[in-house]
Length: 225
Length: 307
Image (tube, rainbow over all chains, first blue to last red; front, side, top):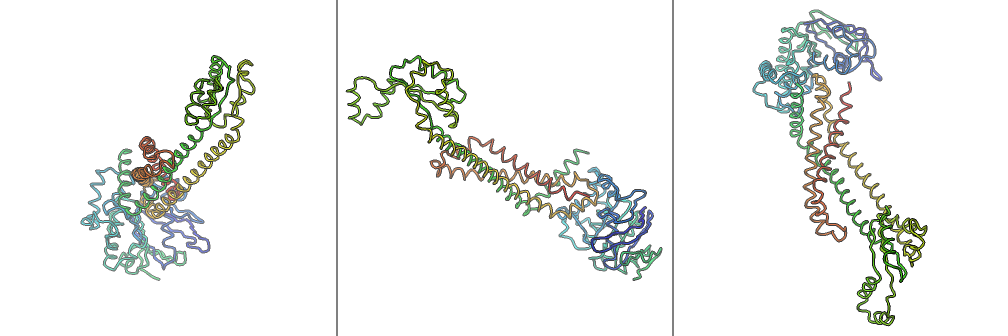
């Protein structure tokens, strides 16, 4: 599904990723671990085409993501749901509107929105928060909302970049379980984290990055750094 | 789907505008100042034009005829003058009329009237008072007499004198002042309008810059350029429209006060002018407000929508 072919990403005076070769198949749950600055976030930015590689290519199916036109890039992004450490919610929109926005963006009808949004709100246990604004929510609630927004469009792939970074253990547990549940339903999940308990809880494939290189890729991995 | 999309964009733009509260208020304030400057300049131009027209009106050229000039010849010259494109009006004063005007003017001056009586005949000739459309055209009108133009030698022989040459210095100076004032007025207006537009532009750019993270999120969620840009444009339209309403209301007390206090100084009553041109001014304000709002939004958001 996603292939990194000898990818290197350099910034002005530093190398963030070097010679990355990874293949992720449909339906996998992949945890990408590493210390801060190991290159985890750069990796997700390359998949989302927020950044372009200095060398090498990143493929989604058989398409080079970084050669897509603006329109095709928009269509590609519709197949990917994203969850960030800092939530990145739309602050002027309510919980309901934040989720509905993702559906409106891909031109779903009002009827579909009215059907699906309450369903997803229930899934992330946010039904009673529907009319609240992001600044009225706790960290855990914000992240559950971000996940709800990411899955409402039924994407092929969910990228969760340090989704538990700002959460306490209880909320972390909830978010990880939610991501596992989504993966069980068939969606590919890429999770970046430096939280040992999260990785050990997931018990899935673990790719370990250090100084921009893959130093370990275990099918049924544990956090080892 | 297209209509649904438009509806969603309008609703979203309206909600963002209302929910942004203080930010929207700041844009309205800045935009209102811009519109206030633009409208003030229209008023200043109107006042300037009115003063300049008053001055222009005071400039004229008079052709004096010899005493024995016959009326048909003078009227002949009058009609040929009227056909000149530079001439806006010609007033004929007969010799008798000139005498009675003179007497009326000097009705308290016993000595002059007595001297006139002793003379026994009308010493004054008929005259034609000529007003040009523009003061710079008096010279060409005077030249028309010098060269003869379409007038016959007979016609020219009855002309006693033309007072253009005496008034030439004054007319030339007034022409220079009027043209200078117009040019200066235009340049100052242009600079002020430009400055205020740039300020509004920068404010809206700054506000959209503050939303760059959200724009990025919208892109990542898969929203296309139009769907992201749309609500910002709707907000721009709202800022423009509300600012023009604020400005138009603000000008009511301002022009009433100026009308009461400054009419003599300015030359026109600004409130009367405002009432007479209300619709045009409102359209100018509304149009400028919306255009500035929309263009600023489109430009400001453009760079955030690149890949």
